[in-house]
Length: 495
Image (cartoon, rainbow, N blue to C red):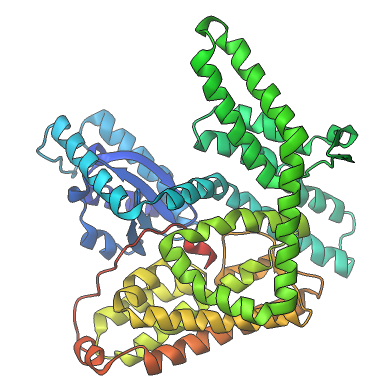
């Protein structure tokens, strides 16, 4: 039954994005179906937003349809199958084909893509987006292993099922012990190299034998440099490989290029990158610990208040390697529960909008449909469909996030340090991933308290300061839903 539902959702989406001939590529992340379009003008945005399964749409370098966690992973394969079937058949039933030639379609698509990139892309954002593309495919494994690690901690503390504890520890830790290999593989793939060569070079970092090697006057440690070292090593491998492809004759390329790539990149990694990346990783962990221990309340205020704007600018992607580094070092990232408060402020603001505009049935319907996803940490529908188009409620949502972040940060400052064992989920979905030395009960209580503070302050700030009199007069009437604006953004599931 669920398969039929997912197939029906895919079938409903396809004609509204111009049919199979308008699809260039298909991918998905935690919450969004990402489509590269040939002709943007063939998309029916209003009809897409009206579909029950669609939580919103976002335009960036790709056209992104927000379906929510879990759903998107099930709908995407059905969508891919329909597109492939439609292309092979020439035209699927019920799908309109644009009356343009292939040359015209390609020209229109290229012009639209170029215009979109000119508006929304900067070198910094493009680089951060590529870094995010390295880590986003790893998130499902991080979540699964994080939850298993939490379950194992409960069994260990309670003394239940002692025979199962070592097995769960192995399952939870296996992926994390090899995460540099996966990062190296994805880095090479993202930057145009051979993925397996990137993984091979990064594997040097976790090889136990590096403990016998001296670099910079000290023995190396397996895993030294972590994901940052893997990123650098794989990026170097891509550069070496491309240089080899340019100069090595084709007759010996299959032998010489991979050998030189792995050898040169491996030696530089062992005698340079592992040490340097290790120092940077240690500095990141020490700074995060010091920041929350000495200025936790203020740090939480700033991080919780600014996270939604960072998401809007696409700059939140820079935090992904930091989160992963902290998880490698301590088993959890203390920053994520603070950043998750931004989503709580957003929910509180949406509830206030709902109460302040009792006559705007369309907007209240949008809020009712988006709130369940908002409570679970999927913020796009509320951001793009409610607070951001209204303006002021977006600012007051940030105020709620700042208050919740300050609460969680203050508790860290008072000695109750905890974090999340994986990145990706937030809101209520983050509860199973909380971990810290103070015990699960206290961790849950503080995080839950932060969410309540974020809800209440976001609600109060929006209720009393989120509207001018003119806004209330214009909006407090039955009207069409406010169109969602779509500045460049990627996965704000960590909000």
